[in-house]
Length: 257
Image (tube, rainbow, N blue to C red):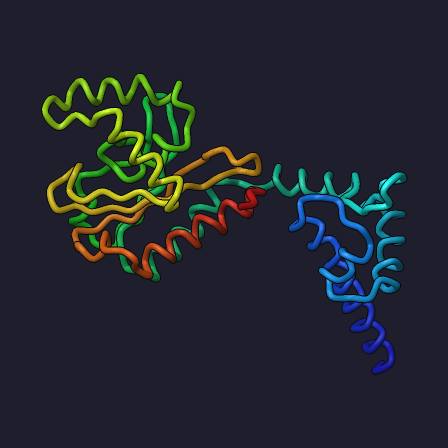
């Protein structure tokens, strides 16, 4: 019995070692020569070659006949696509956001791009008075909301321009200039988040971050909302947690930074 258990452990460990080669190719985003691939995976070239031979037979890895470099094979592609097809954005985001809101004890919501713009599809209320004015299905402004600024930055301008134009027309003396809009876009792309301080409702602060899919397309924004000024005083650990949460969802959708 002990001998059988030892063999089982050995077999599992062998698979774990081999998977390091697959992980290395995923992270590299390009084909690699044997020595470089082995070194990055933390094993000798001879050991890596044995694993690679088996992976090639299985279709997980392929070798370029000219350069001799190794890359992910057809089966690896099929596995990845199958995993993506079985991944539900809202289920992933919902699970992660519930845990986030519990950890930081701050209200939150998830927004997606709908027919009329930035649409709220999930709310997580920790402090009822903060979000009492919000409802599922509400459309948030592009300019005057943190989530809106995420979509304003990462969506094609053809999609956002009509809505932004309508908002500006209603803003009168508070209308942002073209330079203001470009400054916000630059900030969001550089810093990875957007924030507002009292723009939608007096004393309401919010921070938001993007969720991307495997092609780097924006799929949603995750936001935290509070009446506490500390939420928009940076740097802060709450923003770090929010970014990590969105990154986990994005990675499950196939996104790679």
